Length: 448
Ligand code: MV4
Image (cartoon, rainbow, N blue to C red; front, side, top):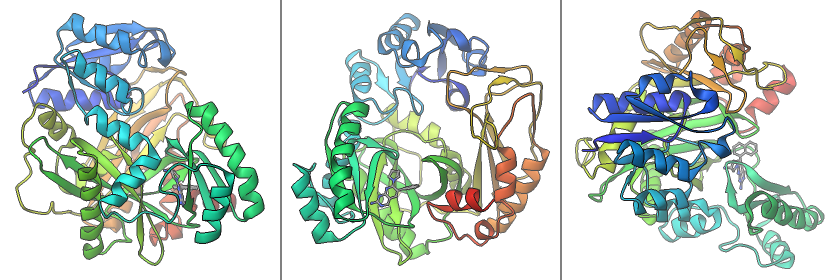
């Protein structure tokens, strides 16, 4: 097993990784910026190292500083969490070349899935359905126009090096596509240093459904069901649930098989997520694969009883995953995660500051993943996620009722949070009826 893991991250996910390491008797090293001396992950880890200044590019994104901290403390592995260096193939390669274990997929899998156009081609070759569109990055505008003419409008241009909603351009007709093509390439070059774009048929109101997978070094790949992530605002997820009300057991099995095939196509190892767009007619298409542990992993843990972080650590150590062999992972009940952000509920602007008072809900079916404590000063330099409130019930109705009472019991004073917005969503008729798609929040905020 691993002896000592350095956590190249901060906040709630660093605390979550420390919890998993503790249960596996693995020592932990926290790294932190000058702004994070008082952050809970520093206190909870066995050791800590300050690796740079408040801005992430001088600390959490500084590869040399992270590697130096691992060498100084004698760590034998590095867990990147999510964000920061988690999907940086170059970093994973350096970790490996320094003789350390990267708690995540091989750099080759990160690189393949990081190129969204190459990922599309690779999973398609493995028989996974993809949307009609380009099989390679577009050579020029005339190719884009010809392809769009064949598959029909609307179409969407996406940056090959993009992902997660960054670098996308929509076109509803030929004139729009002419304009969008040049803009998309310029933006892609500026944002990612790579102007390549590819084209897909655009779906107007799909659901965002993603499958959790686990793959070990012994060749076993399994899926752990899906998460419904359609409730987002500007490509930031607000609330996620498992399972999705839109899937029958048969469709879950079929899409799960496709997710496993996608992972196998990338020779994937570790925990990962395969994203699909699900249309109203029940058809599904691969969108992208995330090669990290995700923010919303707890909903899958709640409905499967599997500790994904512990499995990820075991897999990184070369052990077999502990799930019973040759059996689909059963899904029990329903779970919903509310992302609690330190932000203004009207403008969504970050709301950093001191947490004057904190009361966390508990009781049956309630879990809180957080690094908050009363008196903590939330620094302005990082993501505004401060807590994840996760509820579990025997069915969706019970999970919703539990979500309402847990949100009502939550007290975070001194700063503004997104808790109220969640409480309102739980009273929304479309939400209660499970009528969800990727435009739910836009509609909800417009209609009040
Ligand atoms: C799409 C799409 C519809 N059709 N692609 C957004 C995040 C990134 N992973 C890709 N995304 C989408 N790609 C096709 N061909 C819809 C989304 C999408 C979305 C779009 C607009 C507003 C919110 C959205 C939320 C999830 C996905």
